Amino acid sequence: MSAPAPSLAAAPAPRRAIRELPDELISQIAAGEVVERPASVVRELVDNALDAGATDVVVKLQAGGVRAVVVEDNGCGIPVDELPLALKRHATSKIASLDDLEGVLTMGFRGEALAAIASVADLAISSRTADAPHAIRLDARAGELTPAARGVGTSMEVRELFFNTPARRKFLKTDATELAHCIEAVRRHALARPDVGFTVWHDGKQIEHWRAGDLEGRIRDVLGADFMQASRPVQADLGGMQISGRVGLPEAARARADHQYAFVNGRFVRDKLIAHGVRSAFEDVLHGARQPVFLLYVQVPPQRVDVNVHPTKIEVRFRDSRELHQALRRAVEGVLAAPRAAQATAAEQPLPMTAPHAAPAWTTTVSATAASEPSAWPRNAQQARLGLQQASMLWGPREASPSVFPPASPAPSPAAQAQAVPGSPALQAGEPPATAYAVEAEPQRGDAWPLGRALAQIGGVYVLAENAQGLVIVDMHAAHERIVYERLKAGASLTIPTQPLLVPAAFSASPQEIATAEGEREALLAVGLDLSPLSPTRLAVRAVPAALMDADAVELARSVLADLAQFDASSVVQRAQHDLLATMACHGAVRANRRLTLIEMNALLRDMEATERADQCNHGRPTWRQVTLRDLDALFMRGR
Ligand code: ADP
Ligand code: MG
Image 1 (tube, rainbow, N blue to C red):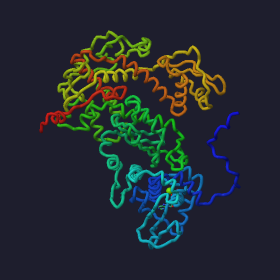
Image 2 (cartoon, rainbow, N blue to C red):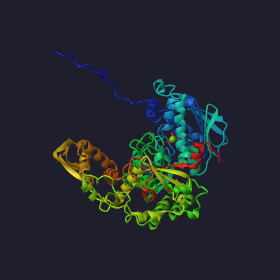
Image 3 (cartoon, protein in one colour):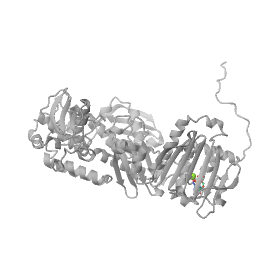
Image 4 (cartoon, rainbow, N blue to C red):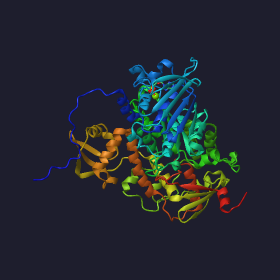
């Protein structure tokens, strides 16, 4: 006889009769969702202040907000007779019907926050409307109304958070950590509402103060001048849906996704779709786990976004999620595509040495736009493209100019892959170096070219060049790999070679997976996957991309199905194609230790200037670096 298996579950309690919970307990349960820490209180109270039309919001904290969170605003105030109502659950002035809910534009609408806060902390409201002779203070616990002194607006005082729920209080971190979360909450509001002034005090000291003003100034104040410098404006308009803001350049990316700000109709959200849309635009230029930095504002008609899917409203659901994903990816790709060498020369670091009239047409085109209209993204992209056309007029059409680098190794295997992209210059073996192209490109003044005039090659890997700012160092393999890759992408309508499996790999699939396998058959085939249903609950993988023969077919199928279910098919297909092209580009790019002539080096530099995303190789590493004359002076302790 074996002993009964020990049970981890407690013995079931004897059944109790069903009864309605007391109000206070209901609020405490609701507070579990809404109020996690002092920062949640800050967020809810500032939301309310903004909904009340405040133009000036002061947040005063004690002991990281655990001892006290006080939020003062100059909004419309609450009439005396409504004061007790404000504390009631499901009491709100912001919606009155389902129609209102669907069109809601205020931060709050659930009528829950004040009731929840009052159930887990001491809350007092002092408020005065424009027509009231003086302010009235309501102490939530005592329920007493007393006259108070303050101007028009509202002060909310929240003291001793979780004093009556010690278990929850134990989950709080150190005061310093809680304070950091509180400040982050105000930063989010501040980024959403540059037209409102914000001040933060902690233990009697003013620690942040952001004056009302324009968005650019606010971004600079909150995220710093570094962010402005390391980011570029994005803008897209999809008829009804607008995207604007800034994305960080690849080198500004971080190990964590902690500098990603997304606002939907002015509300800060943590949205997977937005984050993924942006991340997918970085696929080509960012190292695997790095996270891009961005600040994005999405404006959507309220009927096309559901904000009532999360108690704290930090998540939303978009009606047109795929369109938004695609638009985001395209918009960000557009920003990342423009080669930066030219912009850096004139727009960012205006140096006296760069006489505008001596600069090539392309440099002036891009820099002039960048300087005069920093936020007009679509125009910029167009101009940049125009610039490329002008550049190719100067240097000869891109397609017609065969690369000066014949592949050092035999054409990439399998040979069929190379044929898949006919006319891709870099992959045509035995092409003699084209000199006419490079000679034509020789500028009259080397320093007028963004990436300068080639000087030498060192270590078999690096090309040195001189431009107006000083020394340019280029990793020739990384740079050439990018150039080849971009050409392959431009020329390719690529079919991914597939490999039928000898034994189809069967797996049990969710209804969602089956539906996607049926609905997205074309996209699946385009990425080299052949899936067919075996039964209502099983799928079989019959073919996989040839390049991924050794991968786990089922896992591969599952992850592609998951992507297809969530994101727009074209971006999934494009990514798979790009992966393949990147491998081809790596084979096709010039190898280390090949001696280059000066003419070849110059041609490489000109190619880089004309190539999209030329600043990073396909793996996200930089292709070139600038060492300025000032850097060199510092190196030699030479004052100028
Ligand atoms: P909600 O914001 O979802 O309406 P709350 O519990 O946060 O719910 O607030 C309840 C009501 O109290 C609001 O609808 C609003 O009328 C009023 N209120 C709260 N804070 C303020 C404030 N700072 N200024 C003016 N009215 C306020
Ligand atoms: Mg509210």
